[in-house]
Length: 277
Figure 1 (spheres, rainbow, N blue to C red):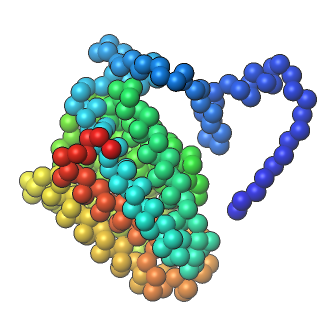
Figure 2 (tube, rainbow, N blue to C red; figure 1 turned 90 degrees about the vertical axis):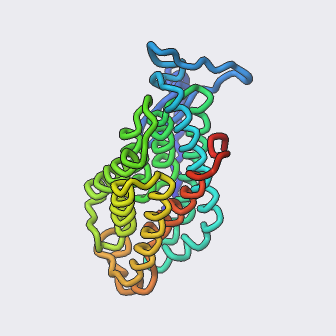
């Protein structure tokens, strides 16, 4: 679905000023460039910093660094499996899932890293990552990952240190939000077929009193099994639906890439070096 459009017009002072100004529309974004070496001013306890991020506690900034490490791990595993994801998507789609995940993960990492130097808390950092993923990835999966990251971010906030219970609630919120956004249900052969089992397993382990690393690792294993099980399903929604029978025997690429991502994140939750990606 690549394409190009060329528009030629007379350049006036007003048009030039508008064209070079920062913008943040859904389909067009242009940001201002900071001078090289400019010192970042961290937020104080009374308000936002120079980038507009709300004031955040040191605990939340630490969580933001952990979130950045998690997204670095996601990007690394996507880079490793990008061709495989494309191959899976080509069975009943157009084969762009690997490229889309690659673009989204790269953009999310760049965005969240940029927030850290300005003292952003976990919510602000993940919101920036979600917006960047949705903006650069393209396709349905890009929009879904953007919604998921922003929904999880809302649970984390910018002041508290989230525990396994908070994370489990945030993941469940994200799963519910994606169900509403994509109008898909379990059994439709989408990423929800691995996301819902992951969310449920995370909640079960958190309720049993297990730590976040333990809960996440156990849930990641469930997510991986659920993604593999989508091979037996017939797609009922999305681009794969017209080629339903062709996809039988092949796992859903969105469910599979999610399993790869949460498995990669599990390792960062136990690492003592994860705060500085």
